[in-house]
Image (cartoon, rainbow over all chains, first blue to last red; front, side, top):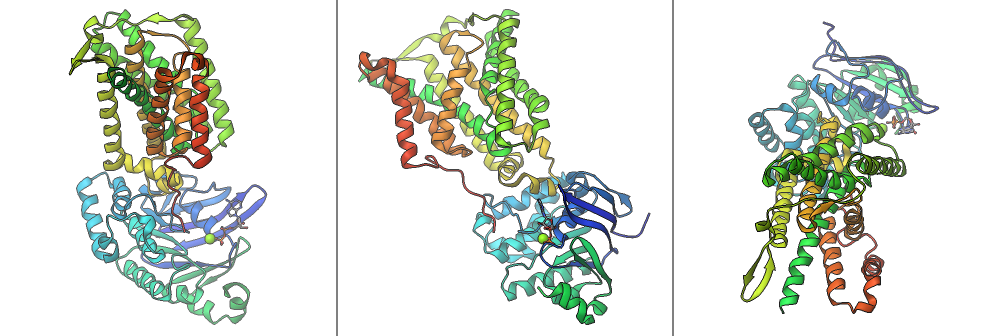
Length: 238
Length: 295
Ligand SMILES: Nc1ncnc2c1ncn2[C@@H]1O[C@H](COP(=O)(O)OP(=O)(O)O)[C@@H](O)[C@H]1O
Ligand SMILES: [Mg+2]
């Protein structure tokens, strides 16, 4: 068994002639946070969605907790211990908050456990508890992001993919989201965090990868990348 | 007064059939964006199921259940063989596929069973009438109404309260997200087809109980009306489909009962004109599908 939660090697994703991800190498060590940075259109979402099984992989490999999952279906990748809080949150707006959680818990195939998890989520995110019967589409952006994270946690993932969780949120909400990321890491969940907010992401991450035009432009320790002013000017000035 | 009450019963009964067919179309459309022109053949197949079961000597009640099962199996078979391979194709390709399925099945019915109507005879006791306050009302339309409302309430319960129902509502919004949660999309789609087949089967039972025969084209007109109902109610809206079904059924019965004979040939035209007028006022339908709240 290889030690990494996620190992992406030479990953390629294409949309017709557009090469969105080109020979990407990326690791998430167990219990750590890797952040994937880069300007708009750099290929971050394509990479993450390919890992989640929602984009066709045109080349390279994806291995999750030592198991080769290249080309596996999204459904099977969840069963390998992966969950995603996707770009744009994509909560089910016509379902209530509680239904969003219950639905996500159904993959546990243990109604009692799912119920307990859902109750625990509503304790952990009190806004969700207060609004459990409301349609999720009526929540504020920040609350929807909380719901997206809570929903992802319902399947008890060991690797969490988060695609721009802070996008469009008020500063206070952004802080809350990053506090949650820190908590989840403490609990031992491995995280791949896509962000445009490089400063905050580099603070929380153990490892950072920067994409530009679909390729890895830099990778290394957050502290090093933070101090690289050239890199900052070129790719991270979002 | 008697005529009015009898016609009201007929209108609700016919509207209920359209409502169930329209709901079946809407459930499938909301999830896979397929306007299933072969839905009528699911209904016809269910009716042939009843015919064959009776021909093989099954008791009437068992024959009805067999017909329901036949409709469900046909709906699942269609999904598996024709539509699954087309998943994600554009609406027009899906529509053409469903046309092809519909034509193939009609030819099979014509050549495999009979191009002419074959009789379906239920016990005479089933087709009696009863009297309430001096007004005679048929047993079949009354039972039809009860069955329809039970089916609609059952479906509403499934959609609102069960995980399978939540998954179907969620799939209508964002089926890829459902897969990203680990929920097997193929299963959700199959369940939606099975439910739509079950509703078409119930419609087939009511239709044949009232008409006493089945022919290869049996499903065409009721499903055509059901299409009109889904558009009237708001394409993809489940509540709208049910409402549209009842409205179309009532308009049709009212037109039939109360229009002068000289206008009789224009009955369908008048019903359609009323539908078009309604759509001019509410282009998205009576109860439009809720748009996905994505920000
Ligand atoms: N569904 C799609 N079809 C075609 N091109 C796409 C699609 N999604 C993304 N792209 C293109 O792929 C490139 C990378 O996009 P994306 O992965 O969304 O980047 P990021 O998440 O870093 O903003 C962009 O050029 C974008 O226009
Ligand atoms: Mg993106």
